[in-house]
Image (cartoon, rainbow, N blue to C red; front, side, top):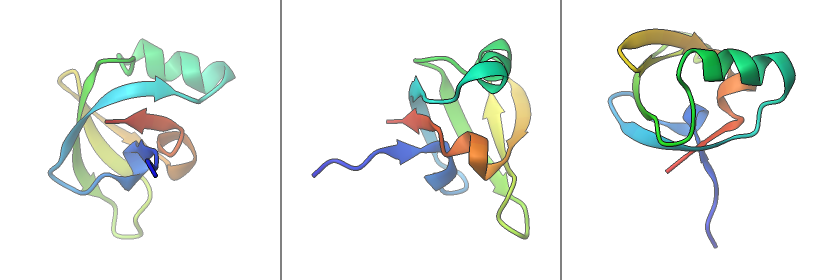
Length: 76
């Protein structure tokens, strides 16, 4: 059985490729505007001490995303 891997499930120091955005509305548009689209490489940089948000390196910019948003971005 193949389980979906999300940005939120990534470990620090690992990278992945975005396969699909499940976000809707304004948040989907914001993620696309910062370059988070299918085929984009993402590096998980650091989790906050509480575990949320998480900092990612996306197209040369460090972006922090909350669990509710990063758990809706599928990666491979």
